[in-house]
Amino acid sequence: MRVVSRTSNNRRQPPPLFTTPSWMFWSSLLILTTLLSASMGAFVALLAPDSKSSIPRTVAGRALGHLWRHGFQYWLTRPVHILIMGIDRVPGTRENSPESFSGRSDTLLVLRVDPNDNSLSMLSLPRDTQVHVPALGWQKLSHVNPLGGPDLTVKAVSNTLNDLPIDRYIRVSTGAFRVLVDLVDGVEVFVDRPMHYVDYTQGLKIDLLPGWQTLNGKQASDFARFRADELGDIGRVQRQQAVIKALRQRLNSASVLPRLPQLIRVVHKHIDTNISSQEMRALVSLALQIEPEHFKQVMLPGRYSYPGEFPTSYWAIDPRGRDRVLREYFHMYWMGNAWSDYSGTSVSTGRSPKSLRIAIQNATGQPNIARQLAQKLQKQGFYNLYLVEDWSVEVLYTQIIVQKGDLVGAQYLKRVLDKGKIEASSTGHVYSDLTIRIGKDWLK
Image (tube, rainbow, N blue to C red; front, side, top):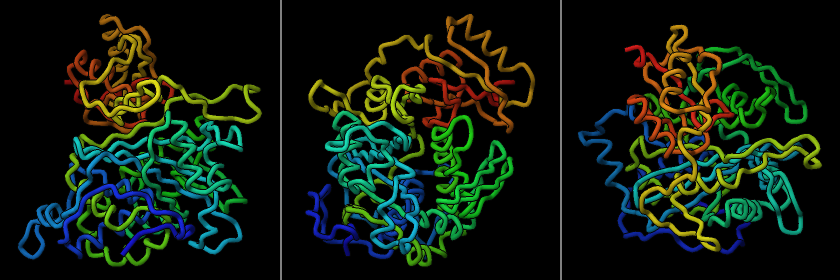
């Protein structure tokens, strides 16, 4: 069995990423490989570990964890970078036909799966990211797939990331995510505002109320795609990361296990990829060994272009922020004309942690806590602080959200506070370097 591109069967196959012995555990392999291939959300969710997994621990008298970890005798020989593209619906095309994968890239993620430290890092690329494409000039990243397909998109992403090598790609049709969420009985997310939007060209009608709720496939897709607010595409990136976390939890639920054969049959047809089945097994083998703290999410640092700066609106990359993310999350160090995967201690960000722009958000339910913390940090020499609107849901434990990828600064801040869990994601205040979301543990 091989998982190959449906739209380019004659494309020369890339070199293998791994070594393989002859023995394999077929039943678990079939389930996990197909689910990993099924959709952007499923791929990331199944790779991402969940510390609160409720999967039953025994199957036919054997530990399920042991069965999965030791049933796959495949392994990666080096870190692998994978581009994942969620493709917009193409009007007038048959679902899952080759033409259905020719739409714009609504979602773009670069994954680094690293066997050296058993880690998974996920970089979200805003769809409006400004990229330079040979023979096409400056384009929005989401437009490259319909202009030149996955190979050109891979080249554009690689060029944008200082020639970071992209080993493989996965394209996912619009129906995959909805189908998968419905098959797992929905995902629980927090909707932070009323969401109402209509786009007749995409057949899109979004109508969601605020609060915690379990969303079905259409609603989850609407939530992840909504961008009719002041944050636009950046808010959508944050919501995509939230949905990925929620889907990861559902896929680790005991109630989902009996439905795996159905998931296999339904969702496999929604993807186009150049990852072979053997390579997918190697990815699964490593994924099962990743601990929760080794799963990190971050968004490509940048800003919206100013009015009149370009003929159209772009997400303009912050080069220093990009290189910081590649160092801290991808362990890649730009040496001037080539990348090095030097694995020593983290290099300096070149700025004082006390100069970082830090948002402080109260999630305790008690008034004035954010102001008190700001005063405490000011006494410690932090001067670039600002308060944001209270988080509407109380949280138990204080979070330090690494909004723009500065893990070194987050670790320094944690030492100063002597409290807080570092959250390697971009779900904090969008204009911050770090966001402190104060939990009820702070009250103690």
